[in-house]
Length: 518
Image (cartoon, rainbow, N blue to C red; front, side, top):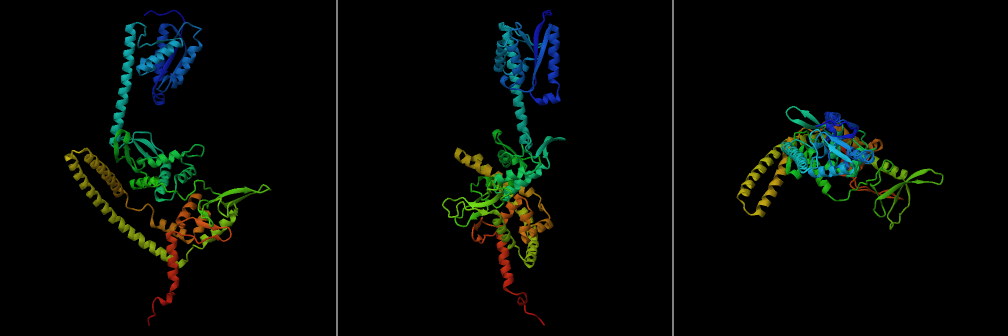
């Protein structure tokens, strides 16, 4: 090959498949060096270098688009501009894409050259070029198949392979490769909201969203958490310590990463999501009107709304008002201070006496001991249920082998899938630590603080705590009359029990419970 003495203009195009190869490798620099050596050997004047760190169509590659624009702008200044690539696979890894790019380069006034292959217009050169492009396509497809197979194998062995979800990160562990580990404090926040939603602490996903937005450590965009983030979080069985991927036929199995919640909690979340009943909690609650959504009009029994109203002097006042057009109290404002004061008096009347609190304390201690004994017995029950399911599975497997009717086989397979799911839940419950998450002292202190003075918690608590207190204290929304204030509320089970206890304690004086003995 003779060395050209003409000052031929040339540009270099380099490409790697991803940004990771740029950070961890030297692919772009190596390609550029080899192309520059080729240009020096040919006597070309390299005017510019264009790079891409991605794969895909040429229209999506910024470097390719910049190079095509450069060729179009300089097409009239020179007969042809040589485009140097290190290898045919750097242009494209598919025959169709390769031919499209060849045509685009030719239309822009570019001539393709490479130190690895000699491009030509004769039939033999075209055949060799097409064969090499086909080989590059085969290598790409083969690499994709091998990657998918390895990922499927990892999933089948209980290892996560996709992007780490919020609350986890990948960490290399000896003999296991990359394994998901907790990323604090986000993992603890996710655990709190998922358990809170499962137990009813959060009435809706909108409440979960607001709670997450108030957590400075939780990832957000300009202080906002998208609703899709909450929905995706609740749909991931991965947070329960399990792996599954239906598109690849990977059924649910125990993972090698630490779970944030139990499988039972995950299933309860799915049940709550499937329940289409309207929630009593309003999605637009705010700190200014914490009772909004929990107060109804006494005349029409419909929820009141709230707003700030501005007077002629420019001063703003908070109001509640009925928004039902057919109600006699429609759009008649009630000062929020009046409603709040009435609610304060209502909560203060719910504080029981010290004598009753002492009895409740003794009952809590007895219940704690009984619950510990029940937990041990429940663990034995889980083991018996698992053994029973194993026997049922063995029987169904024997029947499915002997069955020939497709309908019968499908019914057996559906039953087996249900039993396998039940077995996973029981095994997860059995594996859970039988010790409580909090000590008796912590639970006792919080419970007694709530029962002894609910108003104190309301006055000092956050918006989330206030909403939790409302649900824990009342069975239904509170009816408020503009003239008479709050009507008799439907208190929750615990306060109803305390009322009955107070009545029983006051019915018989202590000295009459037992006759004095000499």
